[in-house]
Length: 217
Image 1 (tube, rainbow, N blue to C red):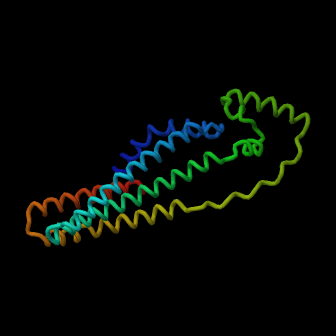
Image 2 (image 1 turned 30 degrees about the vertical axis):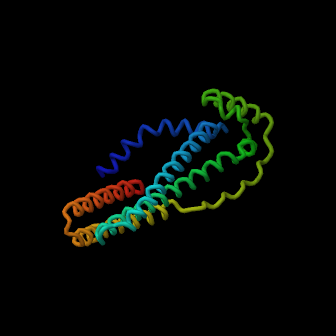
Image 3 (image 1 turned 180 degrees about the horizontal axis):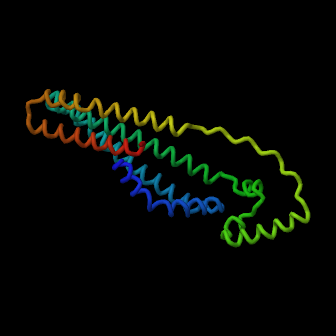
């Protein structure tokens, strides 16, 4: 409960910002959203390039390791970098999909289906209510034709709850296996400095997994 309340406290200030985003998108003004997503994609691409550079360096360290424990240590760092690259790729793909949807969405067709204009979508609520009252008065004099049958709703392309459950299970499984794996690594070397580095590495990995888990709670 404490963790959930902390997450709520962090997310609360974003509600007003998200409301503004929704209003702009609903009005058909997606320029700011497009620029923001393009900037995020550019940052993630640069981060991916850094991870890939670190990955090549880590491969060299593995091939030049002095002993088995040191090689295993570098191999685990190599594996972590590979996972980070995969996660970064996933984020880029999701952002690219959102960007494509924003650029290609036919707002004009949406407004035609709703029977409103882009100007009406940008009008404040008070003025819209006044317009609606006048329109209702006119419609009471001249009844409108029967509306066309509603179009079937498209099926969702993915199930968010199923994805969340799967992600939580994957991360919890990794957290469960960490202590035993850490003990095996530490037992494989007699170098106290290497033991300390291994313990720090697993502490970082555990913290990273816990942060990732909170995103899916």
